[in-house]
Image 1: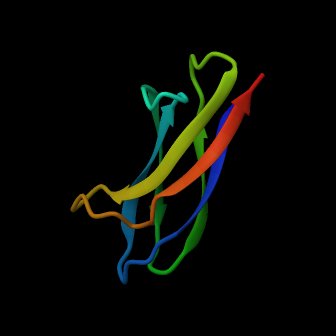
Image 2: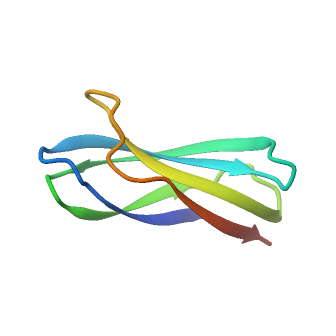
Amino acid sequence: MVLNQTVFNSCVGNADVVMFAVWKIADGQTVAVETGGAYMTARETLNFYVPIYNIVPGTYTVFLFGVSVSNNVPVSSEEQVQVTLV
């Protein structure tokens, strides 16, 4: 199973990007951090497929953001989504 996230590279250069998906339960406790990676060209929109491993069924708030590998700069704004696994 994967979580699909579309990201726009707002940087003016190309970048290797790691997409982070931080999974939290209702009380704010982090239960998992999953990652997916891809190479993005400047101003490109790309789908990231972040694998979902060992997360039990339930409803989660997932915070998603992309970071450039070469200089640790965010290349996307943070997005928050509700995900229910059955």
